[in-house]
Length: 397
Image (tube, rainbow, N blue to C red; front, side, top):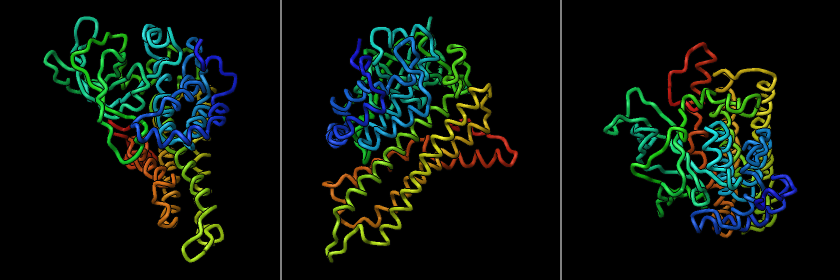
């Protein structure tokens, strides 16, 4: 039995109980370029990474709102840990709908095994008897140092390794012994502690049962592997994007907290007390309201679609895009709120002795993720509202 299996508190309670340690370990994680061992242990012991896993492998099959709240809670204290929680923590949701043989390989001996990603199809799989020979190099493998498996996007190729036309994208799942983590490949302005390094491999054999079709996963073609369970009928783009949105929202909530703590002690050079400055107080209250509203939208949307599917509904593209539209807008609202605050925080706030600048940089880095990019989603949502059709095959919805 693993340590986290013996945990008697909920993941959220465990995270809150260790919030101060998570805060303390955030800067050292940045310095290491990965989560500290202490941070990884807190996350493992909390059970947060098993919330989406099936019960037969020690998972909770939890309501998505529970997972999202936990990811936000982690991000409030440690932006890199919150980001890793969102990314790595959502993978068991997909693995639960993969071949049972693969689930046994990953979780059969240890329910707390982590799986990294990324899904961008930077690899090519050449079909061979029983599977594929897989080659490529992928950036942004978040939390990869603490993970024993990785899910990678790739295109099916011909015998020479040329991707087929039209593209056939699949998700390939590979054990740690078969790929290399490229050290010194994560040199970035923000989210340094996530350790989102490159991984690479050449001509690694991946059996058929360790792959799924990307389009088929997005459409819900594998839901029958978890029959009768609402959680696994919510569609991959919706669940994955909500995880990324939640990790980013948590960082914004943490940024508001560190700004609050900074203002409590701030007195300007001309002896003005920051917490008595009416202009600053106005911007602070407005920002706090915007961030609270964003949290409500993210959680309420997920609750509504869960209830809808639980009652027998099927998520259409229109509904999926609506949730994605609201999600990217919620995150943008929170980040814009913090931007307004930090622009009037005074020159002291840019110093590394305060956590303000680190939270701000991590938020900006998080906004570059495709699940937080609003333009394509807004365009798709408006197009559907006016009776048009979505033609962009890369739309993450």
